[in-house]
Amino acid sequence: MYRCGRTCNQARIFVRNLKKNEETSQNIFSRTYRFTRKEPANRLQLYSHRSLDLPAHIGSLLCIGTGMIFFGAAAFQCSSEAKAAEKQEDDEEAQTEEEPVLPEIPESTQYLLIGGGTASHSAMRAIKKRDPTAKILIITEEEMRPYMRPPLSKELWFSDDKEAAKELQFKQWNGKWRNLFYEEEDFYVKPSKLPTLTSGGVALLRGKKVTKISPKHSSVTLDDGTEIKYEKCLIATGGEPKNLPAFKKLGNKTTLFRKASDFVSLDAITDNIESITVIGGGFMGSELACALGHKGAKSGLKVRQIFPESGNMGRVFPEYLTKWTTEKVQKEGVEVITDSVVKSVSRDGAKVKMTLSNGEEITTDHVVVAVGLDIDTSLAESAGIEVDEVHGGYRVNAELQARNNIWVAGDASCFYDIKLGRRRVEHHDHAVVSGRLAGENMTGAGKPYWHQSMFWSDLGPDVGYEAIGLVDSALPTVGVFAKATAEDTPRAAAEASGEGIRSEQDSENVEQMQSIPTSEEKEEFGKGVIFYLRKNKVVGVLLWNIFGRTGVARKIIRDQQEYEDYSELAKLFKIHREEFEE
Image (cartoon, rainbow, N blue to C red; front, top):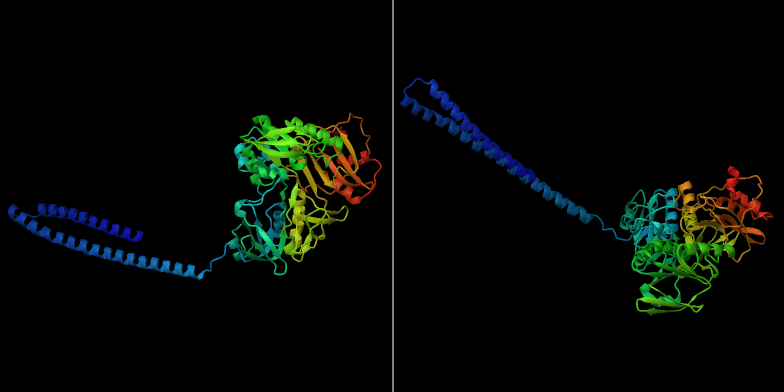
């Protein structure tokens, strides 16, 4: 229609120009004829009038004829274009009718990953590496795409940019900015498109829960009744944070901290209250207490921490170190109440009133319960998978396989460690490594799980530790400590390595060092190595403000030797690095 209108306009302009040319030529002809004829004036005037009649008629005829030609051509063109447009619409309608409507959720997939956490993401990357055309469907109960959890209780709370933190962006200890998510949004395709992709792809099905697995039919059932068939399946469901019976009736006065949405919610809550209490003295409780103490130092928020142990990390550290750690947390502005449990809880208007086992009564605006994780084994019965009665989680073989074409990775996997026996680990590095191995084995690698995963925790940017193996305060320990330097902090380690999120990055090579006498120094816990023993053999190593040396610790555990001088053994970790540099 646009082209038709344009042609008609051109025709009208052409006709108007013809009329102007006609008038111009008529005037010129009249003047020329009048001055060249030698006849009487009255005859000339009469003759001129008659002679000018003919060109005018001819011009009119030309104008009308040309206009009819152009209008006819325009009309023909408009008609042709209208018919072509009508035909195109008919073809599109016919094509739409012929194309099948794809279901929102695919009926089947090659690889099905249940859970949207770190283990599932790691498995996906391993599958894509070994099978580039793989079609992978990830099912997650959350509305967010897969993300890392460690910064939720660490770096995000130390950000000076509040708006960035709300968008889940943070500055790592090494000073570099990043967001919480592993992949950009456009990395994932719509689930409905996954079956049509000849080159493979990864789809993310959000806000859905798998309620049943049928190994016999190789299918899963969602909470809305939808069934999806699979060729290979991974269970990486992790767990949910535990709650205590006394706090279940408090409703929105209690936060169970684990997800990104929990951070966003708690950050907003602490902007508008005067006091908050953290229940629990383990990894999560101690990290959150320090993080909230850091925020309280700026905003005036009063922070308390309550737990039954004698000090922070009392189930992991030897007693002398747990007391030192408690002093560090107190320096962050946290009121730490040890050797106490909450006996009763009640509402006192907008406040929460708690009575402790030591007889003390506490009033607070909000409570964070951080007392561990309840592993999700809800699929065990339908899938026919054994749940470990001691450690919890799904029991798997050395290849992390629970049943035919079903693997388990991450927090939910209870695996057999050839050096330390059957175990279950709830840490980021284990999720990365076990997810990767499960993904490789889903593509036929057939590798056993022999890896000793590490874990770490930071009490702010200046104090942190890394550990590997069995680290339990109930075991005998031997600690070797030295004076710390400015380089012996999580911040300095991150700046030196360029890595913001610590995981399995270090080398397996163990550097052989010469024996150097240990210097006599005043006992302090600036940095050091703690060896955890069982039957006089090292089964666990904790590196206090020593970073990037878990490969050394892994080899010591793997060798299972007995040692007489642990000061000499500690030198493998460069505990006296400044002495080597002098």
